[in-house]
Image 1 (cartoon, helix red, strand yellow):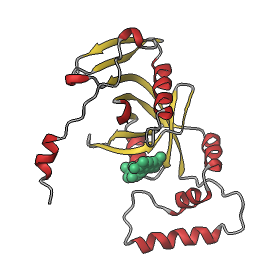
Image 2: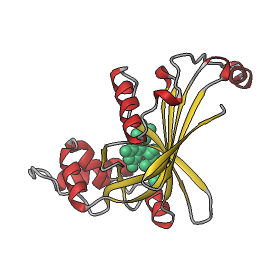
Image 3: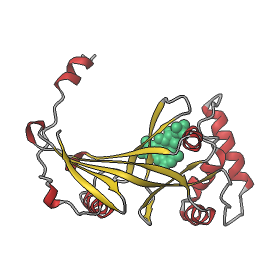
Length: 217
Ligand SMILES: Cc1cc2nc3c(=O)[nH]c(=O)nc-3n(C[C@H](O)[C@H](O)[C@H](O)COP(=O)(O)O)c2cc1C
């Protein structure tokens, strides 16, 4: 057996991919985000659109989980989920969320904070129709975040939905599945550097514009 604590203590990445200075930043954080996301896609980072979505429940307890960014529209960051899920209930109770992207090969992290709201049903319909059939069926079959008795129960739910839509070409979006859009009021771009002297540039919403500042690592 590995001595996990000793191994964890000794794990040390060396981050010296690039520099990131105030003069390198786009004054618009959305454009800066686009640029880094494009870099991550071109660098073939695994799941470049995956981010940790953090929410706070009505008892002020924080929760995080990974979801996928599926678009940026009018400077809002869009992802899709089950509207009955735990995360959705938390977002209905408290619309403050944070998004954390991490691209290890580029030694980069982006943190975004803002307010979340549902996208229009037309937007959710459009995206649902672009999903692979298996994902559509899974979204209908799975009572996301609810307790299930066994894997068999899940498989049964999927088979039932598959049977129900046999021969139906266009599967309609279930009302309890759709998108959320986050309107950011804070961004932080982190570029790993050597000796833990990383670059951190924060953007705070300031009226119609953004106020930039360098933060200590
Ligand atoms: C790589 C990855 C991508 C995921 N993408 C999504 C997603 O886009 N939407 C979603 O609802 N769950 C996604 N999940 C599952 C969530 O992390 C989570 O398990 C699920 O949404 C239930 O969370 P909740 O109980 O807090 O609502 C993804 C998980 C991983 C690891």
